[in-house]
Length: 427
Ligand code: GDP
Ligand code: IMO
Ligand code: MG
Image (cartoon, rainbow, N blue to C red; front, side, top):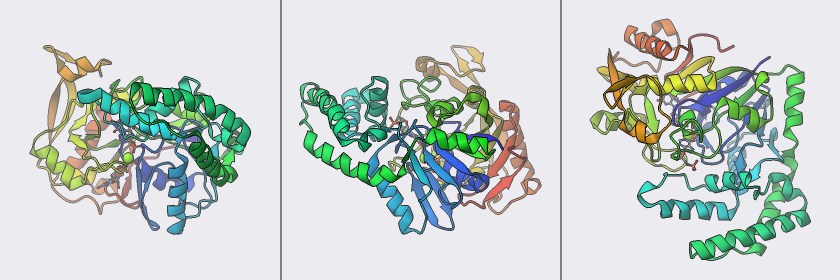
């Protein structure tokens, strides 16, 4: 049985939650490996509609062990609230575990995220303000506090005291903000620790055991490839790696263990937050897509920027993730459009280029070169068999396969679990 990484291949919100919820039926373990509650994964199934921020989207299957891996930054209040909500709707969360190595989002991370964004003025990144950037900065700077630290109260206090002193100096001296109380944070986080203690595990052992038993393991990506700090539109990125490679580090398994990498793409592009997006549509078509697809963020409610499918970015994403197949979501959103465009190259300073530039100053100057395809102008949401899709829709999918040199295995034609076409096997 293989390990499958399911990752976002654009700027996030591709529909990873739907795809993981769909495929997890066959899995024994599902692991979230990056990000934190900046993620918002929508799942619609017989339990209802959910916007999951931290809990893996495999949680709806009682036999599936769900792990929040070491690569995730956890806001304990959000996690406790999310499990309570799931329980309220009848979802059993007793097979949810969290890595003792995962870092904690602390109150100063959230405060600093907001203050740093304010200080960026017109150059703000448009973060979710969940404290993600400051938490991963602390991880790298060796100033982080980890989930496992909550299990030893004395050691936790000893760790928190000097870190908070340092954070309070930054808050008061640089930003003129009020200092945070050691006592309050300590008491609050001890309570969280008590609550979460039964879930905390050395999760790499759980994963290794599953692999030894040849069980199907799924790695659930958060964010998207073009938000990766290395390969995304830096500095307009997030702070942990959403790539398949990030899955090895954030779950705790070697690269040789990942057998399949399924990249999730929307049939067009969206982005929330600032930074370059070559195919962004600022006209009525962009607005039409946004309203038809209700493109508003699951986490922050912000309007998503919409645009045509970017074949150059998609090829790049396929390459840096080593995609073995593709899931195309939201094909139904394009049902009404008479003409569709796909970006097949960029024009940069009079030259045609076919690669995704590393520098945003170059990317900002890139003009998309479009190819036009006819729309199908008929509803697709009730179709379950690939052969029954309109010819123009099949032509559109075939062109995406050509541009990425990667086969499409899944086509999603609606938000619900069952609104799916299986075109080819993933395995
Ligand atoms: P994620 O962060 O990648 O899990 O994606 P989000 O949940 O943030 O955003 C994807 C949105 O698209 C959600 O509102 C989903 O319910 C919705 N969705 C997923 N697949 C489809 C689809 O095939 N068609 C339509 N119309 N909506 C979809
Ligand atoms: P899912 O998992 C879409 C974006 C933010 C911002 C940038 C940095 O639902 O696909 P951060 O809070 O991470 O420091 O913000 O990254 N961003 C996302 N956009 N989907 C997400 O997650 C995102 N997580 C972060 O909008 O532009
Ligand atoms: Mg999302």
